[in-house]
Length: 173
Length: 193
Image (cartoon, rainbow over all chains, first blue to last red; front, top):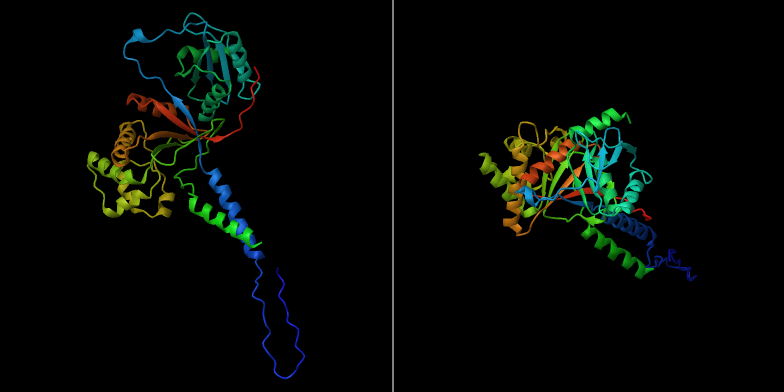
């Protein structure tokens, strides 16, 4: 392939003729380049399209009667605090009832396990996600992603209430 | 060898023609990852960038509707743009300056634009303009290409939840309830029940 054929001298002496060159050219570097480009373009095309996570927020209901009240027994609240901390409690918190706050984490053995256990006990669970102002966007996406992983159907992104921030502050976790 | 080379070049040409390079953005936004496998559409996307300094940037991914959007926003705020500025706007992916200062941003060269620190479109004093941009862009895209737009929120890992929530709330006030959060792909773990 890459060799250049050398015509042996005909031995007749006399006139020196120009050597007959083969028409074949060495293609190896060109092929190298072609494959390099091929790999480059293949990789760039597949990786540039970003993924999206769809979030549908509830439509604001005009009249209060159509809204269904969430039962405390079905509620499960996740609070996201600062420094990548995540807390949860079962039920609802208000001025009178103070549920027990527990600390969890974003890794596979943290909040995911808790959620799965809770789902097994009560399949009708509604998860309330309350990000604190000090938590970051990654935390929010992580929790929304956990909903996706654990196949939690009903969840809502709710602003954190004063009771919840106090709960975090007093728990000392 | 020759057929292989032929094929290789065919593929090179194919990929070269189909590749669309990721557009350069005004700020570096490091997106979080999720297991969602839904892909972002290529056009008709309103992109809201939120960086870690609480700045919000706006971008419209639709070549045809961009000119219309600039015209309408200019008319609404009483700002006029020269032909040159309009052309520059066509090549601008996202920006974070109010419409009053947009003219001077468009006059700059691409290199200069990178140097400028853009203030972002959402501030305590002015929450209306961002929504105006979104609503006008939706309408402009509808009129130009007759297709609805997707609203994609691209937030940084360290972006402030308060800012993200504010953006979502403002859009909800306008009855926009469906959002796409742009993320990187991560493998979905197997969950045992």
